[in-house]
Length: 63
Image 1 (cartoon, rainbow, N blue to C red):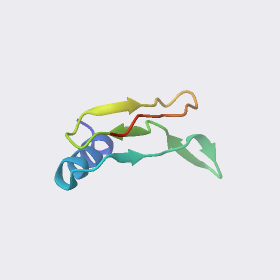
Image 2: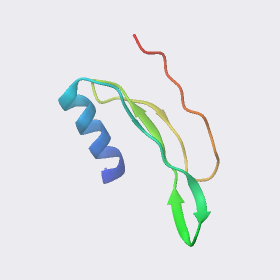
Image 3: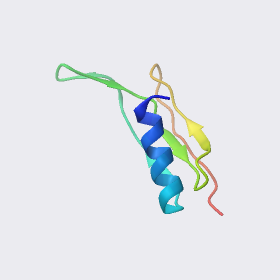
């Protein structure tokens, strides 16, 4: 599992909180953003996952 998914999952499980990771897509000032934004629940499950090709708004209902 790649670190961009593993670290937010670990933080969610350790702290018993939802973790949101937001990342842009495309290039800006010669830098490339890889997207793959995500939302992880307190048990480490991926609730929502973006991709690297298109913009999206990720949402989830919090208990």
